Length: 332
Image: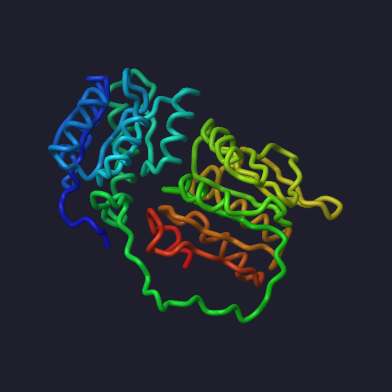
C-alpha cells in the first residue's frame, strides 16, 4: 500500500528550459503527481522549497553556481523534508556527482536521454520516472527535520536466537533504491580483519559502480573495489558487481573467483542479485550469508530461495529502516 495517498508535490529543478518542460510534461500525464513549481538553478530551488513545501524534487546534477549535490546538502542542513531524484547526464563527471548524491541520501536518479528525438526522449524520461515515483510513493513519509521519518520498532522487540549455527564463508549483499547510503552505513562497520569475503550487487549502470567502489573504499577498513573478471574472492575484500554486467562466482581447484560477463538476466537486471547469489550458492552452499537491503522490485528473491534450499541463511532489512521496503519484503 502506498504511504502517500494524495498526489505527490514535485518541484522540477534544471538549468535547461528544455528539460524543465520535458520533465513537467511527463508529470502532467500522471494523476498521482502535481508539479508545484519549476526552478532554473539551486538558489531558486531553495527559495521555492521553503515556500512550496514539495514532497519531491527532480534535481539536475550539473548546474552553474550551485550544483545538484550542493542543493541536496543544503536541504539536509536546513532539515527540509523534500526528497530528491537526481537527473544526470551520462558523463564521467555526472556519474561522480550523482554517486556522491546517492551516498548523501538522494532517493534515486534518472539519466537524461542523449538522443535528438524529443518525443522519444520524453517517453524514455516517462518510463524512467514512473518507477521512481511509484517507489517514492510507497516509501515512509518524510517530515521536516527528520528525513526520512522512520517508524520505530517497539523497544521490547528482541530478535529470536538462531536455532542452528552456520559456518560462514561469504557474505552476499544486494541493494537497489537507497542502497548506496545503506552500504555507506553497513560496510564501514565491518572490521579490517573480517575473515570472509563480501560480494555486493548494487543496482547501478555502467560507470557508476566504479565511483561507488572508490567512495566506499575511502571510508571502509576493508578493501572495496569494482569486480574485474577473474578477481579472487578472498577474505577482507569487498567486490562490487560492475554496472551493466553480471558477476558470477565460480571455483577452480577449490579457490573461488568471479566471472564478469555480459549475459542478460531473466528480469533484465544488470547486475543481477539473482545471478550472483545463485552462482555463489553453488560454490558456498549453506556457508553463504545473504543480506538484502533497501530496494524496489524482486531481484534477489530467486537467489535467496536457492540459498535457503541449500540450508543457507538470509537476512532482509526491516521496514522501519529501509528507504524502500519492496525487495526486502518480497524476500521475507
